[in-house]
Amino acid sequence: MNQHIFREYDIRGLVGTDLTHKTVSLLSKAIGTYFVKKGVTRVSLGYDARESSPIFANLFVEGLNQTGLNVLNVGMIPTPLLYFTLFTEEVEAGVMITGSHNPAEFNGFKLCLNKTTLHSKQIQQIKEIALSGSFSSGKGTVTKKDISAKYTNFVKENINLGSRKLKVVVDAGNGIGGIIGAPLYKQLGCEIIELFIEPDSSFPNHHPDPTVAKNMQDAINTILTHEADLAIAFDGDGDRIGVADEKGNIIWGDDLMSIFSRSILEKRKGGTFIAEVKCSQRLFDDIENHGGKAIMSKVGHSLIKAKMKETNAVLAGEMS
View 1 (tube, rainbow, N blue to C red):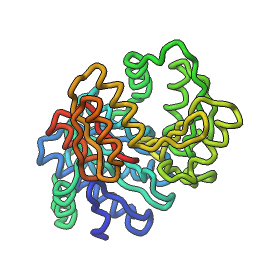
View 2: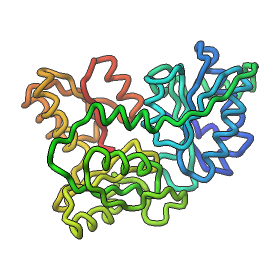
View 3: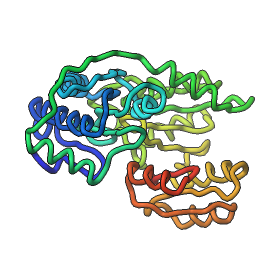
């Protein structure tokens, strides 16, 4: 097993080289054993649209069951929906099989315990279990459930876009985000222009990472052609976005967070906000100037979420 697959806040590698069927089976049992030691009995499992993901999902169901864990298989979904299950389903842990924004030949695993994502020492503890080959044993069950309607209804109940009908370009980059995002925005009252919504694990149009300017060009061109109000582009698993305005200008993550924080501070006076080291000083100054408290964090969604809980922050964001 290539030990370099164990990263700071996920496990990932090259399919067929680092992640073989045997390796993934071992990982599933190592992760299951880690969860069992933490008192977990039921795990939610989701996966993205990469070619290897459904295969890896089957291996994970089998491995987790063999360690005694029951599995709630929520199928092919964007990563945020897997996180949603941690708060809405009777599970104590979660596994998302996804290559995220990485090239097509990669895949990986994002891991959650209770309502937090695993990182750092926790990932290393799973590595030690995997290398030891000593796994828990048992006989778990598997249940399948479609949670997309539950998620969509939750968003609709909590977000009101007002009376103005927005024309929005949605570029899914042939990842998984568009199958939820585009219909949801329509239900929220937007007119949608779809780009590359259908999942295709070869990513034939452009790489699904909207934090890279060239990957936003199709969306920008479509804004200008159709006189749209904005574009929202997803990465491969739908947990990061790129945004461009009606003139085709990219609104980077720190500027987006300035917009969000100003809105929040109208209702949450003195709130704490967290951004990471790649964000501009302009963001931190803007939060302070509008009455908020700004804290700088290390990069990484798992690390930032932990910092949010520690500081009771109202919002956190990364450049991605």
